[in-house]
Image (cartoon, rainbow, N blue to C red; front, side, top):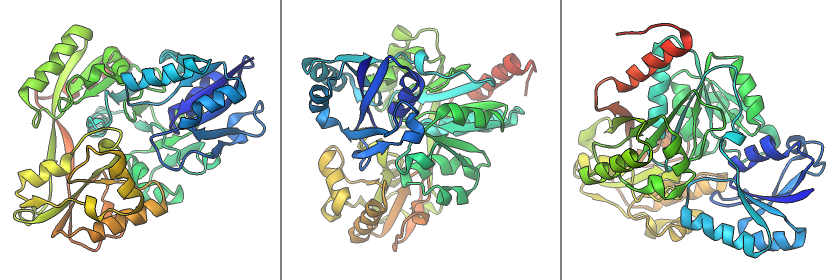
Length: 445
């Protein structure tokens, strides 16, 4: 029996365990490690999820203890199981594991993909913050127009009581409260709910898949970070970001998506430099020349635009996009510039607690505030940071209306963004073709 240590971040790691190791007598998983997400280490993957071979569950430890765990537990294999890391970072982890005496594994994407009895369309990305979520919503809208009943399955974000998160169903706003969702979860779930779609997420993605199959006739996999799909896809759509040209080749497992995608969507072409767009196109031509390429704009809008002009604004952006996504700005900065804000107030001098630590951990961040909210305490610290920052207006560029999730006693405006095809009806045509192939129904406008 080989002893295994799984490196993770509360998502892919649990899925890899469930699919590959949970019922495999050839392996004993001694621990998970955790990184990227605060407050997930020093917990236990519960026995009810781990299965009969693990009656005490499996400990979740800090990643910086990797060498110690390898030595003390005589670990044979370290399995890397999270996403959105530089190739260089990945190889440093591999070198540390090998130097400590263990093998280092990357599980093949197909080995961890479950097969559904209904068609599956996956929407993934090459980095966090590419604009995958607006593309997912656009695909879901097109599927409904074509007579499908899509059920969305979202990449895991199980940061609470894992035993209660085996399979979570979201159909109403009340479900978000029922499941005690973090801001990060709300950002991904709420837009689908608001458009009338049922969404599943959780920990056990085979059980989730079976539940979704009973509700819809097609599954839309809404990926997270730049992870690969958990399900075998009949159509694999991958979103690229020309604001970060070349990242499609230098981050794991985003490069896997880039090379495997049958449809590559170059998003944000309305705000990216033409030179950067051409770099992305050249990489596509060289490394995935058979892929269909679609260009989309990320259309940024706000209501009452005149209220921005001449104002000192605090820009609040999507947290993961700015942090491990490494983007220095998002849609909020675009809106502030487009609509005439006189200045963007720097929140860093006014940050408190874990928000202050976030700025210290990610020094590339400037005059933007990441909407961090993984716990009640962190949400309170986000509230205090906003309250402390002197501004005329708070521009909220998160996928949800943050003012409904936390207390903000200042004027706010919501920034919205959606994917808009630059070439006409390419996404519509794509779903036309998919429907004809999988339903046997010719669709035309």
